Image 1 (cartoon, one colour):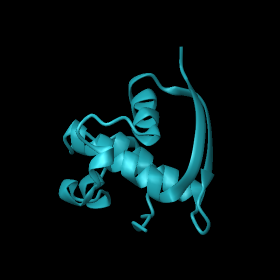
Image 2 (cartoon, rainbow, N blue to C red):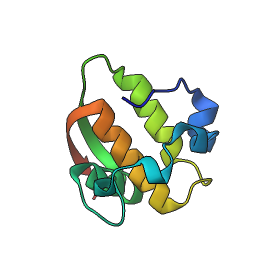
Image 3 (cartoon, rainbow, N blue to C red):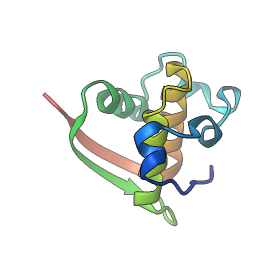
Image 4 (cartoon, rainbow, N blue to C red):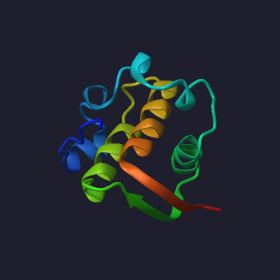
Length: 107
């Protein structure tokens, strides 16, 4: 399992160190890149482009949900990585840390 990093409010607000928190693009399985639409890619795109009005997400055993979501938010908020890498990394990490998710995007 990919390690979850501790982040603070500045990391989340400014996307600090996001590249260090992401797997290299060549280490991410193809199902999460190149415009594939896994459930986790769909979640990323709804969250990134529209925002979410609700999110119910079930962490895998041993995963600290709050810590994992803070890690995800830091990557999503960063301008540092290319968008395609950011999407693939977030989708992959969501699949690593969570069993399932249900969400509603903002109208």
